[in-house]
Length: 217
Image 1: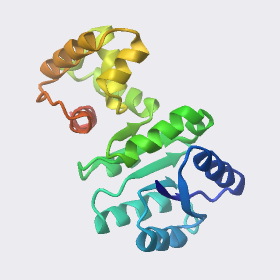
Image 2 (image 1 turned 135 degrees about the vertical axis):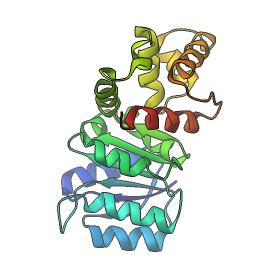
Image 3 (image 1 turned 90 degrees about the vertical axis):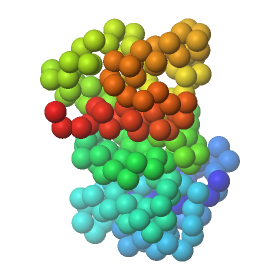
Image 4 (image 1 turned 180 degrees about the vertical axis):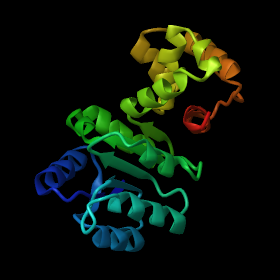
């Protein structure tokens, strides 16, 4: 799997290169600025891009904007964005085209190698990997004004959070130590209470849930 990596901090960039290579990824470019990232994404056609939000020269959202430009040129290009802090606007911009193959993680997550590598693989496969803190903020923001959310049980809210992170029923069942049949029942109840169409497509259901959580009330 061919990866373009963009991170301006040398030690972190070098560490991510070593981590990904140790798990079988091929790093075709490891760059430190927006212009370098633009060129790498245009010329190397990677399977997935792992991109820091803030890159030189602007140190604002240069990395994110490079990734969004590349996805306009190549729709569906898998992009996993890394950020120091939760910024819901970044998550919204990534999800705006509704095509999936996107992820948004806090940089702290890279220190959990298994979690980070799983997120890269999930995004590269066309799935969605959203940071738990992003999901928690979206849930909290809607909880006070969204009556359907208030009808969810504590267990259903737990399943919803994991679902919105991009996890399959199998993965949710394993984490909660219950059967897949139980998770299927919970997800069916969640979709019914939120007024969303039931889908067997993991990515489509994640995007539907995130769109519901993120819409203006």
